[in-house]
Every structure is written in C-alpha cells, then in structure tokens.
Image: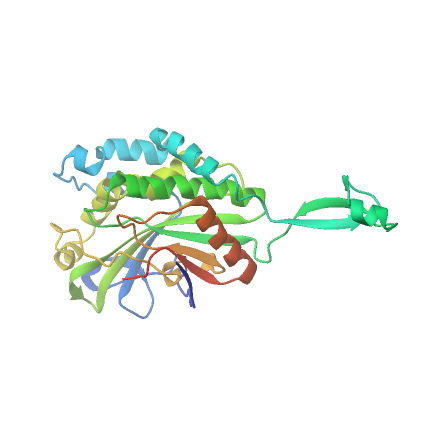
Length: 303
C-alpha cells in the first residue's frame, strides 16, 4: 500500500533548545522533540557513554551492548549478507528504467524501420535520469516486542538491496533510521520523542551490512536505542517511565526529517508480523518518489 504526505520539514540540525527538564533537543512547534545523529557510529557512541545498562537478556535483545557498538561502528551485521543477496536476486526481474532511442547509428537494429527504409533504424538504450535524483528513505526501527525477528531482518535486507538498484539507475537513496516513541506522561507540552539516525546513502562507498544492521538488527533498538533513552535527564526518565521505554504508535512521517533532507521520500510503516516488504515494491516506491517529487509511504495503513 502506498500513499503520499505533505511535509513542512522545518527542523534543522544544530538548532537545539532546552525543553524544560527534558534537556536539550531539537524542537519545533508541536508535541515532538528530536535528537539527530549523523551516523550509526555516532548513535552507538552516545549509547555507550550513557551509562545505562539494561537488565534484559542478550537473547531477547539480540546481543550485548558491546556487540551492538561493534556492529554499528565496524563491519555491520555479517549475518545479513545471505539475506541481502537473496533479496537482491528476488528483485532481479525488476530491471532498470531504460529509454530506447532511434538514430542513424546504434548498438542494434530495428528491423521494421530498416525494411521500410527509415534512416533512423538503429537502436540504443539509456538509463532514464530521474527528475528528483535524491530520495530519503525513512525506516522506523522501534516496533512491538511481539514482532518476529525475521520480519525485521527481511526489511533490512530489502532496503540494502534497493540501494544497489537505485545506484544503478541514477537515484541517490539516503537512509534514515528513526526510533520514535511516546512518553507515559506529557511534559513541557511534549509527549513524543524521535532519535533520527543517518545510516548512509548510495552516492559513494557504503557497507550494506551497516545499513542492514541499522534498520533491522534488534540491538539497534534494544541496546542502542534503550541506552540512549536511559542516559537522558531525570525529567526525561520521569516522563518516559523508563521501565517501559515508552509506548507506540511507532510510525514516523517525513515531518520527522531534518530540514536538510527536504525533498522526495519513501517512508516505511513500522514493522508488523505478516507484512512483506519486497525489492520490487520498495524500488517502485523509490521510482515514484524520484519521478513525482512526492513523499510516498510504503506498507500497511498507519496507526
């Protein structure tokens, strides 16, 4: 299911203000405060320095905090490679956006035109340049504890595969992981917070294992996200009810992007059991955003 958003995107990295006893955050008019990270490694370093250590088991969390920091700052999620390759192969029939040009010279011949004596009977195919070559992909990484790990892993593998396909047809995909939760109680006019993590893009060299880690591995939320929240101010903890780590809905919108990410976007719904994200479907959404300049949503209806 797809749809569109209209977004003001009026937040900018660097404009941080003190929000009562919640601490310093990015804030615009409204109920949401933001903390933005320019890399997955930066998010991991803040979590490591927070001093917060969860009592939850490594089995439930997907690993230890040390494991999470190692994957976020190093080689990413090695275990995702096989699934990434499977997702890439599953989308191999999708192909590229090609435009066929007739001319007097080319790499192949149009036999109908040749027989009819048309001078421009030769063919060449070129990748079609998108109208909007930079698309933001927004992935909520907070989800219900009942969500199967396989569901989340599939999303991460598909996203990493789609970046490769987008690179091939000239579209730059910028990936943002967002941890969005609501407070147990409203404080200073705020009842929602979002950690926004820039995971990388397809402009140059990037590691698909790090992208897959940031949008799919359970420790991104259950170790890094929880540790970051656990390291916030006492006022924040009081509003959050830290034992529950916040509540849903966990969906995000393009309005949660910083201003410098203004432009077309594709926003995934929060992970839910039974939801299948495919390379073909997600790439079609990226193409639609690049062509129309709109903010597209991909997945089930929002909460």
